[in-house]
Image (cartoon, rainbow, N blue to C red):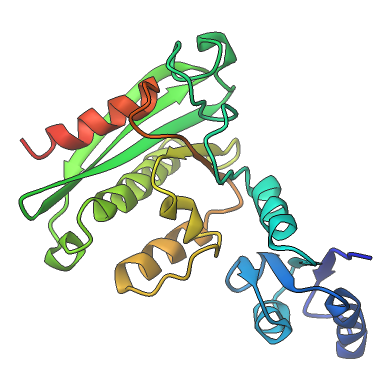
Length: 239
């Protein structure tokens, strides 16, 4: 039996350990939704380090990785594949399967990055209820980040999109970040380990905002309007 646990610092430590032991039984993967570092962990010890003493910790044990990823994705609005939900994968309308009428309500921001001759850039296109409301782009300046080529631009695009959303006061309603590079969601959600300073900084930035930022992967260069627009904006920043 799987148990979702909600832990508060004030609870008796013996009760916490008892409940943690229930989650440990027969599980091979531990999905930490709310903890010091949200993500999926392979060992019980790693899971414990993220949730013990963390107020409001939420986690769940699973037998398979697929179940753990589904749990993390369902709670964060993230998907590992562009399947037509959220940001869409088809060429019609604003990038939604079946045309603009299928575009999700709320704020959806397409992000992309680019790289050319040692320089990297970013671009994003923001939609509100299917209507384009703003576009932004810019070029990065970090020589260390430039070593990551367009990945640096992808991370900057997502970060700038979230900062834009904060400036609009969208924390209460939330936003969906539509991306074609998997790491944009994989690092913050703990699916990938952030090993470099640049990816670690990006992951930490996003993890502080997982309560209102959702991710949706979309196939790149497949005619999705928002994705194509973000791609053009990123490239234009290098001209």
